[in-house]
Amino acid sequence: MEQYIIGIDQSTQGTKALLFDGSGRLLAREDIPHRQIVNEEGWVSHDAMEIYRNTVLVVRKLVENAGIDKNAVAGIGISNQRETSVAWNRNTGEPVEHAIVWQCARASEICGQVEKMGVGEKIREKTGIFLSPYFPASKFAWLMQNSKEVEKMDVRKDLCLGTVDSWLVYKLTGGKQFRTDYSNASRTQLFNLHTLTWDEEICGWFKIPVECLPQVTDSDGNFGATDFEGFFEKPVPIRGVLGDSHGALFGQGCHSAGMVKSTYGTGSSIMMHIGSTPVLSTHGIVTSLAWGIDGKAEYVLEGNINYTGAVITWLEKDLKLISSAAETEELAYAANKADRTYLVPAFSGLGAPYWDNHAEASVSGMTRLTGRAELVRAALDSIAYQITDILMAMEQDAGLEIKELRVDGGPTRNKYLMQFQSDIAQVTIQVPDAEELSGIGAAYMAGISLGIYDKDTVFSHIRRSKYTPGMEETVRNEKLAGWKNAVKKVLTQSV
Image (tube, rainbow, N blue to C red; front, side, top):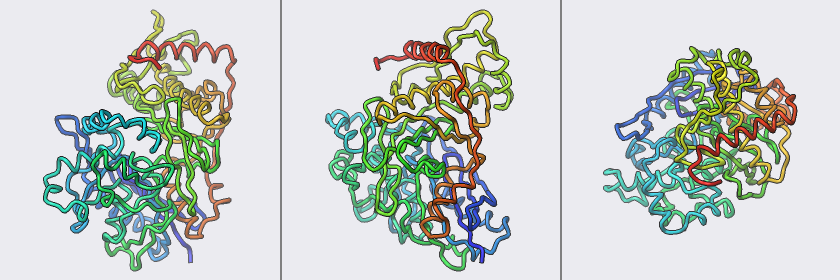
């Protein structure tokens, strides 16, 4: 009998379910969006129960619309938006507040309090990441300090604190399993990369009881089983869990040291696999776990950029220079080759490797001949320049030369952008024919752990197009120097 694997990709905007056959071919996909809850203070929240209900519904729709025998579904893999933080009652399974989304900085004051203890660098040494309200540690602390429901609870016995993966695992298994995987744990700012355990000292600084945190399990481990509230006649095992960027890394086949992927989304996550030993960055990027497989942990260097695909949205929605993203390619090719306009999209500061929250966006180098096409091209170029900055930092930290970059996300369909990325970074760009790399990674991990897929052959289903560098070195150096000068003008602190 044919066997199927379902990949669930729970992302910031919605939840998608992907159906794969017994050889790893993608057969069907369903999507359900969820609300983005933003209050007058700019706090960004999600309804965790809505996300759970949508997860159950999207899987039911997937199986029913695909017309397969639901008894043939052999396993589930889950990828998830990483730093979004959930607090719920262990007994009732109900959230105590809305989930705090990764974008939300309401916990900045808590980070400031911890910073005043003089432990910021020690936290980075232990966890690989900078002290920031971006990560769940301060978000969990905020939920504990500001929830009236938490005030009524015996916290150590009754409270669960977790990222979206552990919330879904808990709900899908009917509260039988409270687990997270190594990739998600490494992004909480509470997990020690060296001991591979929750760090009690850091938990103490944030006033978070270790008892409230999930059990950390191999990414290909046993996360329990689910019948999706009676939809399946027999419970289906959950055997792959990964943060979305880690899922994309796995789905891209970046399984050995030196391999790099970049996701071109609203922002971008650039990850380099660095092997079985953590390397702390000295060039403005962070260290995390790639995953844990068969009891073995592997590590990554990662740089995050705030504005990549969002720059194209800005051209369309705010400047009205384009009516759709598809127009940018033709305009970029039509732009005056001699124009030297630079856009630095620091609309909410600059992320890696600069980490300047106070930097402001700028356009520089314009002349009277600069027009619509030139501005559009500068916007596309800014995406490639930012990613190149991170690739160069990774090479310095890891001591490895990057020769190939595997990419995914909507903007990778832009031929101008991909060629310019190849030219300016001097790497070969590999673009897959599939878009759903996070969900593919989680599903393939589940299928491999269940013995349904062969790791050496299953990734062959992903076909790739290639871009190779063709820009003269002197031209490249001039362009990079111009970009560095443009960035320098917007920085409020020295790098």
